[in-house]
Image (cartoon, rainbow, N blue to C red; front, top):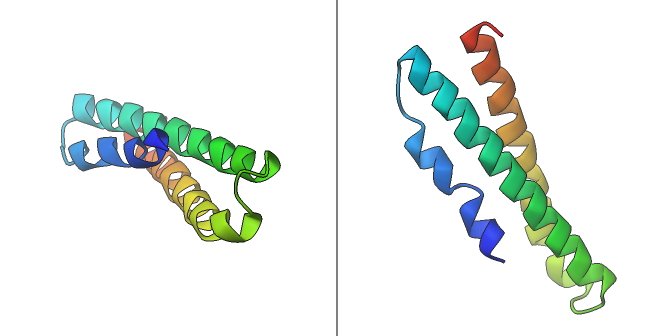
Length: 84
């Protein structure tokens, strides 16, 4: 469950304005997206291995999927702002 807490940690560091800093922001968002996807994988594995029921994990899995969508959209927005 470490990846669940790591997924959003880099986002707090992304409040900067220069072009170089925007590239760094994109890197942090990409890292956060990777961690969120890893969390989703582990949550699904908990269900598949029957270590936890789907009902026990559903809310966390839903939040994880929402975070993935938010972070992915942030990456798109950052790339658009960089002119990529």
